[in-house]
Amino acid sequence: MITLKGENIYLRALEPNDLEFVYAMENDQSIWEVSNTYTPYSRFLVRQYLENAHQDIYEAKQLRLAICQDEDFPAIGLIDLFEFDPKNNKAGVGIVIQKNENKRQNIGSEALELLIKYAFYNLNLHQLYANISVENVASIALFTKFGFEKIGIKKDWILLNNHYQDEAMFQLINKQI
Image (cartoon, rainbow, N blue to C red; front, side):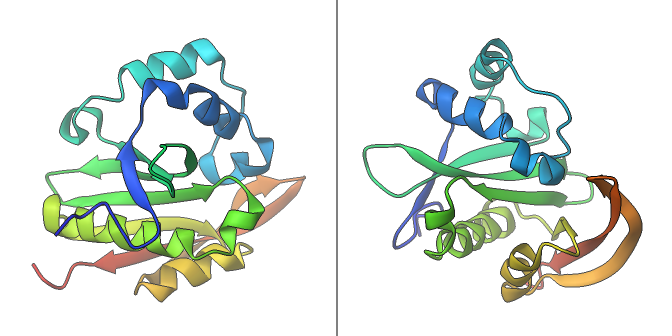
């Protein structure tokens, strides 16, 4: 089983030539609310990050993968495992697709499915979790499609445009372990 390759996409490690893509994603203010970013990133910082992207998930406590469609390598999105906790066998999951036209092509679904399989079968994780604004209906639908269950609401958790939003926490337990 090739874990990181699906029917229409594949997930790969970040490469030095992803500099402009990652720079654009990190500086896209429309997604700052989901990435807890508050300030822009310089190309210098992104270059440093990419130079250290070779670190093992056990060392870095995170894994960021590029979501790709074509064999010629360009990334169309990113999917992350973050706050990796090998003692308790859990990690958070985040996903972002850059262009709106790619968001309606089942790319997020396929990427999340691949990441879940990788996390459960290769990393032997017991659980994954995601924190999602209750107003982000598309993300909630994506995660619940794969069995993530809402386990709680954090009230007034996210301040966006001078308006507090609740954030839901979703959890997926690996029942195979």
